[in-house]
Amino acid sequence: MLENKTITFLGAGSMAEAIIVGLVRQEVVSPSQIIATNVSDQDKLNYLEKTYDIRTTSDRLEAVRQGDIIVLAMKPKHVKEAIEYVRDSTRKDQLFVSVLAGIPTVYMEDLLGEKASLIRTMPNTSAKVGASATAICKGRHATDQHLQQVETLFTAVGTVTVVEEDKLDAVTGLAGSGPAYFYFLIEAMEQAAADAGLTEEEASALITQTVVGVGKRLQSTTKSSKELYQEVMSPNGTTEAGINVLREHETQEAMQAAVTRAIARSKELGAVFTKSN
Image (cartoon, rainbow, N blue to C red; front, side):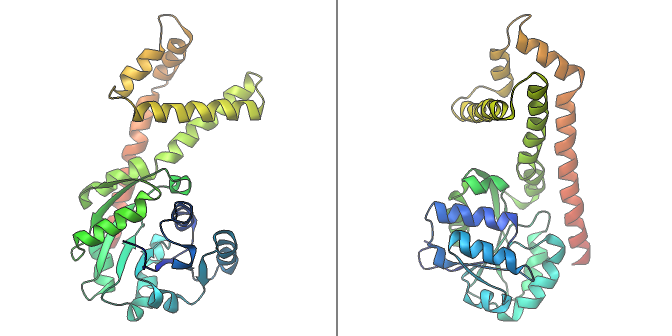
């Protein structure tokens, strides 16, 4: 489905790199089918070309002209300037894919004009290791075939869930920001391990495998997360003692509040673009 497609990344930041890594490692497309471009960071383009053997250019107009699928991966605050700059170099048969948090499809479609075909996505940075939890939705003019192409694109870097656009703010707060929540908690576990006398290497090995095991356990069972942590607990045991401290500090409530605030922030960002549309 993507064999003869050239994929242009308009923007070459961390998310673009994560997707590029997945596409190359999973051999979904050949490196020569990928073009990356940005406004001014030539060092990053040189790095991407040398590391992944893809094509790069500082000529954004030429990069867009050559692309069949254009991935909008610039910083959200630059989306208007970027689209207006390249718009006259776009074609009606191109598919646009947004990885930008909080920006509604209608805003980008109106900037692109000519009933542009657009799929909005919300991946996360675990795409770099082929483990992103990505949600996608169609814009007004995209077809089911376009949706299938983007599913193929992002299946290479993890799982894909098709949702309605009004759910993407929730996806952003949950899965888009989700990896950072876990890294934040892991930092605390690392500090506790150091305080207990474990070396950094020992702690890293133990914590990393514990997290991997939790993920695999969740994927392999129909049991709820509550049932799973209760399985580990025994009366007056070590796990119960630790869980009781987490409850005293209202850890679950804090996590719920964090996700809720991230969702609200995604809506706030989207509202800015809706008002300016």
